[in-house]
Image (tube, rainbow, N blue to C red; front, side):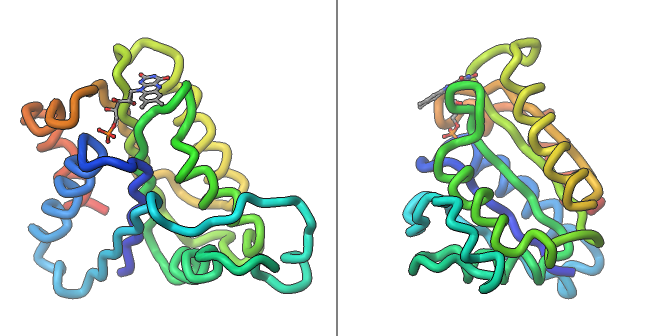
Length: 180
Ligand SMILES: Cc1cc2nc3c(=O)[nH]c(=O)nc-3n(C[C@H](O)[C@H](O)[C@H](O)COP(=O)(O)O)c2cc1C
């Protein structure tokens, strides 16, 4: 099984803590040796924003030279995709959105047969709107690409070390990794 994890945060904070907990869960499995885990740090990737030129329709890759073809190849090869992102202005971070927009180049090849998990982390309380907005966005993307949503977790945490002190949530994230 190939697991591809996207870290949407530019800092070493709560999203990274969540990813490490999921990885710990994966490592705890009896079949861990058969699982390949790759984390893509969206911060620092060279992704030119989609210009809607549609050249990718015939090329199956972006016409502009950036890191998106390599990322899309990893998405295509993955069995499980995990999107972990902070909330920025009621949405996913720009770094992650740039990556997702480039799925356009290979959407037909991505269809079906994958599971996804989402982790959305914001400062606001969990009854605030951003969590529903973002989880709905991921649910719509999964529906369109015929992916199964294995888990969708929203977390309220703000300072970089907040989540590290939340044992209950970390245990839940580990369980997601253990049960994928
Ligand atoms: C530019 C910016 C915009 C943000 N917008 C929101 C928001 O709309 N809602 C929210 O709950 N938190 C918002 N936050 C807070 C972050 O989501 C929160 O600090 C989160 O824990 C950051 O995750 P990280 O530690 O993995 O980077 C914002 C933070 C930044 C820097």
